[in-house]
Length: 434
Ligand SMILES: *Cc1c(COP(=O)(O)O)cnc(C)c1O
Image (tube, rainbow, N blue to C red; front, side, top):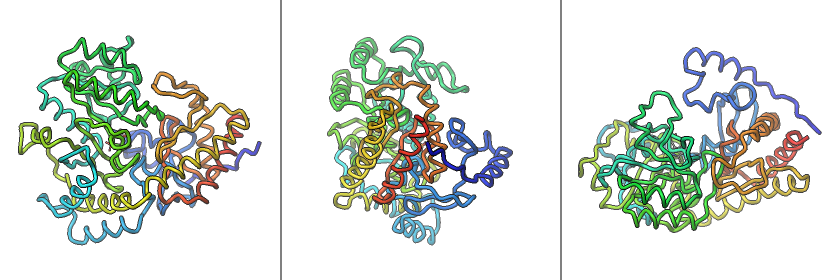
């Protein structure tokens, strides 16, 4: 067994100590604190293509890709050029700009599932607005979410199942009034009977929100038939279906999961890739539903920096690349190949680990079972991930610092990068299971 030599992380460690004086936990988003893995967070100073470099001079092949936005890799020349060219003329105006029209046209002309779109500044904001829209449009109050799906830190959605099966939500954060979570009902994924029962026994449900490709609590791939059933039963009961495509949008295909499965939700939320690395979210729906949004309709939603021209330019430059012939097919093939290299090695060694993928998303599941709901994940398996993460850092591979998070392959990952990373992954697994 070849345990790796530890890389030097001393400058990162010092900077993290300093950051703790400024920010709660030293970070501006909790998972960055490396609480579930070893050592201080690494401070990156530079990214180019598939690679990132930290303040101590270590180089890594990056599979976090800023949690998904960087489907073209770091510092893509066309994206950077678009940003620089736009910002040279000013960064924000608070009036409509050409850049907003351009990206909207590009999206709407290539997406059969939304007719109008509204830009916001984060995925959380997109979801929050979509929920308000669903309530405003339907005149109903309750919302249904699935355990194991993450929808940003929206009050009413920071909720998981209570002790019963299909129950009132229990808040997963302090600072959220009971009154808010009481409006949220929580269901386990992949359980059509409970879903049906809930819809039959409630007539105040405005919407059901789901990550059609649940990728924030492991990769809980749903069967197409399950999603189709969800669509049909929502229609039967007059309940709006929201696809939260903040991760899957522009990732599992240009038209996201809606396009991949050919399922028409009522409202779709976007984030991450849509901003090309800048802070952007969006939500879209039919003309009829979007007509409820101010100033056309009574549902208020606004933003000082919404549709920011620099961010719109970065998004557009990114999306243009995605529309090129075979972009998604190539990326998906590469990802499958990468997962298979590691998977077949682990299988030959009898290691209890599998690598589910969809498009360019992969997950490291420390089990041989197919997992479709959050309760099937064994929390103890995260100890394996902790060892893996450290061994991979020491071997020049960066994964997001939690075993519940998925990895992303970008267009910038070359075959050679993937071979190198797969080798590192196999070596690291020898240590994990050694
Ligand atoms: C990342 C994510 C969000 C939240 O987006 P932020 O930009 O972090 O606010 C919401 N929903 C899903 C499915 C996400 O993956």
